[in-house]
Length: 302
Image (cartoon, rainbow, N blue to C red; front, side, top):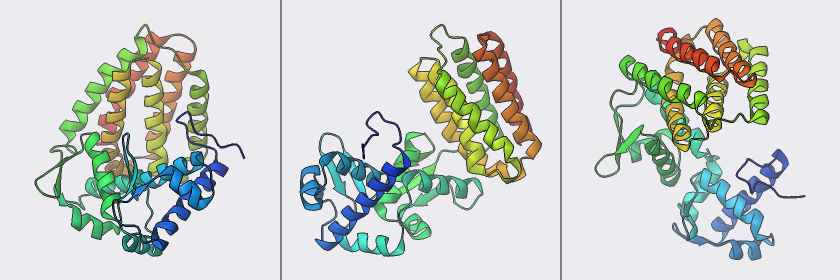
């Protein structure tokens, strides 16, 4: 089997299964040999113990980092976030959520009013049944997007006003400035392969609209806007859209149950019309359509 994934893209499904299985072997090894929290897991040492080359070991360690079981430290390597006893508890309980899964759960609970504005780490580990390392990785990820900030001690507080109608309106006005500007920028260059993929994702969602999920609706929306931001060739536009997508996740969770099917259908149709204009080379018209799309969005969501 040829092992890929070196270009930053998600490896094929068969390879992911291989890396996940190898990651589980690393966890079992740490339990068996009673590793302490903070233990340094080296690629060479693990490859010798598990009789696997270093490249797949590296992929497996990255997948464990995604689950918060190890911490990746720049220029130093990977370190366990749990003791062997802690790993055993997680392994037995099956608590192996990825960091993105965990911070989406936290966002959903906050959007639904199930979490207060200020939260403590120990209460969250108990609530979600995860390790301190897993939780901290998720909280730090949310902090990078400006959703959470650290309080004194081990407390965290959500950025004030994230769920207010005023914040939502301001978010969309900001997006109009950067996304329409990105479409008309002289450095814009459409990635046609990625555009075909995004179009296919929309078609698939529309074909099974009545069974659509909040995650699926968020994913195609976020993917569409991020595609055009990446095509702008401006790293600051791309980064801004990534942050706005994550902030919008809060509103997606709060509004999806009441969002009519007709509105989801309309949103997808608007995306595809914008793509049509871009593919036909009329980026000025695409920017006009994008502005209409973003101006309409906060009004129909509230």
